[in-house]
Length: 166
Image 1 (cartoon, helix red, strand yellow):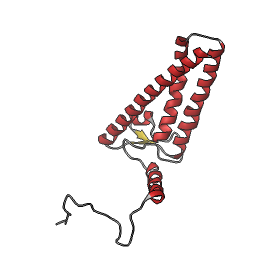
Image 2 (cartoon, helix red, strand yellow):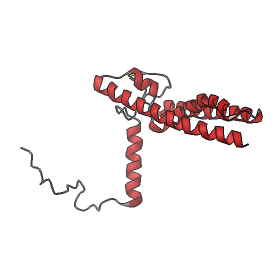
Image 3 (cartoon, helix red, strand yellow):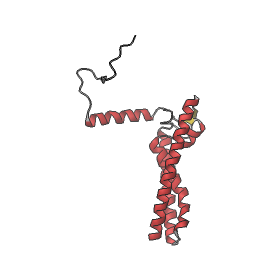
Image 4 (cartoon, one colour):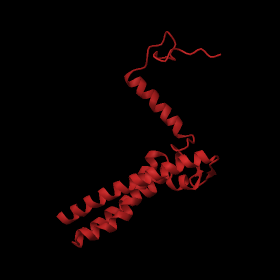
């Protein structure tokens, strides 16, 4: 039979000689824990690691940003009206998705298709086991797509306004 403290008492796992962690030391411990967790599959939280994260950020994030900037420059140079700037939504969405996936350590395509990649090679996938895990991954993927859509709409409108004012 397990002994449990009363519900109104807080339980501390620190040894009696340890002081509770505060400030920078607590932040450092949380950062180390976050880094450790990011290298292991966690359903609905993290389905990519290392090279996959770098690939998302560099290829899609920065690549989409470069294409967006080039297209914005061309549209501004041609002095087109704001509705033409809607075309920017495609590279902006690509860029936003790349950066969001890198930040969240979660690939939307992998999440929707029930796979993960926690290996040292980009593009190498393993199947997710368990319907509950796949469901959590699909929910996370959907959440990232929704965020990307909102960010894309805001950025595209701001670029259209900026291009019109230039």
